[in-house]
Image 1: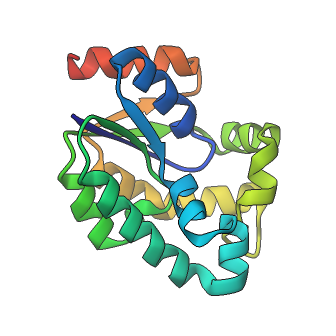
Image 2: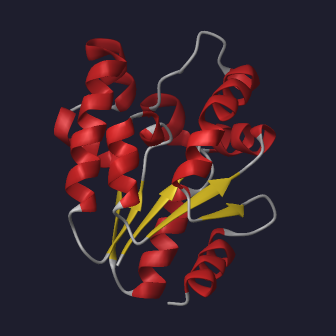
Length: 171
């Protein structure tokens, strides 16, 4: 079984992946952490030093490798859906779940996440709510295209979200 969580940063992918792995007795991987390990630097440093193109190349390589494994929960990067090659890889998975959150919730969650500021690059010159709204508008159709199911994460804990996913996919 391969299950991939997609959605914007701060939607809960990594936290929910941990809960799912515990409940289902399988491994989980944060694709962004794998990219950082391979690059030997944070994603923010990778963007600054090598550019977004290099980051996206590594993201494509890592996702292809992760998708080839079995019994794995994958927390994909927020922009993984941007490349057609990645969307084809996601289509090979048993389930792709889009975790959704409002811009306000995303901003609140990322502000509370101490690792976000140091590890994640700004993706537009605007930053803040303007960046989140713009990128959600751009990526939303791609998330929808890739997802087998969508879950609004606004009113649920990560454990509750994991339970909903398990119930929906009948595991």
